[in-house]
Image (cartoon, rainbow, N blue to C red):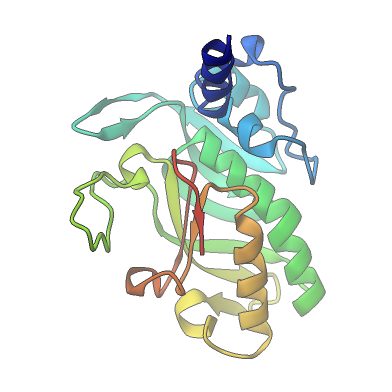
Length: 223
């Protein structure tokens, strides 16, 4: 019984059950602090119908794209083409629905409120360094040769933000400062650990000196 229960819990955590078989309620992007957020995001990993029901403006603007079967560790399942999330322009050609939903939650309920509090303006657009790339983990000092979550379109590298006032905030430029830009970047990065399983920034290693890496992979690490 313990093995069966453990198997069910693992299947729920990893999104291996479609929504109709999942004991958890469907995710609502308008809800700021949903219970079991990590597991509810996982239901979007393979369930295209659940993804379609979630793609509603203004919290997220995206269209579903055809799957690319995994080959040599690269490809994607249940992907979308993202145009905007959390009220900010964010153009990503291929990204998993699960990660796109995580971005919408983070931007809506963590990034936008911090921008309003600190700068009196909202985020108009987000600059990034890419999502899908068939490659191994960068900065892998142990030489494992493991594929990055980018190889499954399950990650995004965020480089900066542009506010509605026109102000630009860059990770490379402002992370190590002591002004409001640095406070903003550190605050929103810390909150990303709630939504993403891996949230890495400049303090992690030199390979992340100019961006935040966020993904919804198997492992958990926030720094």
